[in-house]
Image 1 (cartoon, rainbow over the protein chains, first blue to last red):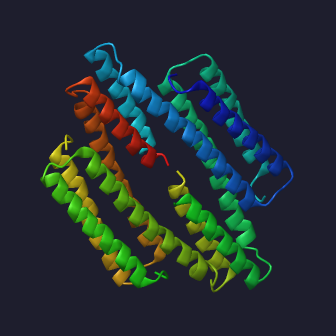
Image 2 (cartoon, each protein chain N blue to C red):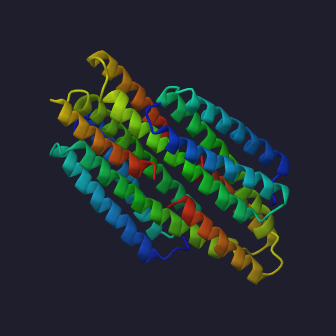
Length: 87
Length: 87
Length: 87
Length: 87
């Protein structure tokens, strides 16, 4: 992975902490809308981590591909990821 | 929360397990695109949990509101959640 | 439809105007990224119209359902819409 | 634009036709949920057009950039687009 490891780790650990909090909220029978809001906040953090990872991938792996063939294959791979994102 | 607790627990624990797996992938410097794909799979699970929670909320809390005022206030609350979802 | 007709009309006509602009941009072979940005702006307008329509639906059709059965059926319908939104 | 012009034109014209249909549905006071569903179908078409445009951009403009500087600048531009998509 080419993204800054510390940034990604921090985001993922924040998301995991929130997820633990949500499991507790479910256990305590907290109000639906409050749980839903926390879930969306956690998804937003994962989304941000994904954005960082894909941006770093473009800037490093695609920019610095060793050959034209390698770059073409990395771009095809990225297009497939984009298809999943924009589905 | 009105959604089935077992279903939500199972979804959230699966997401947490995947998140632990992603943290390990980051540690092991795995390939960006593979990490991104796992992140999106985890977001999809949280999204499904959110859907279940909001659906159950509509079916129980809104359907069975104690009074018209209570229902109006729950609907306003739901509309605010919808705004965050469709932003 | 229970949403304010003027608001929805204005949003949809703005989106249509932008779509005509995008068709012209395609005709003129404009830059990919500029066309993509305009497309996303148009989607955001349609999204806002959708949000207005669903909010008004909840506030009128669900709030003021004629009977419990009618309300239950409208809520089921809304849950199906939510499934498409959060898929 | 590097995407296939005919494909993009066809998608955009389909979306425009659907938008005209939705304006008519609004005029005729059709049911909220039916209008919402049509709006989401139209957004899905615009989304597909956007996907085609961005994929072609990566395959042509980024793959065949004239220089390393040109490629770096195109990648930065694409990362900014990705930020808007994943916001």
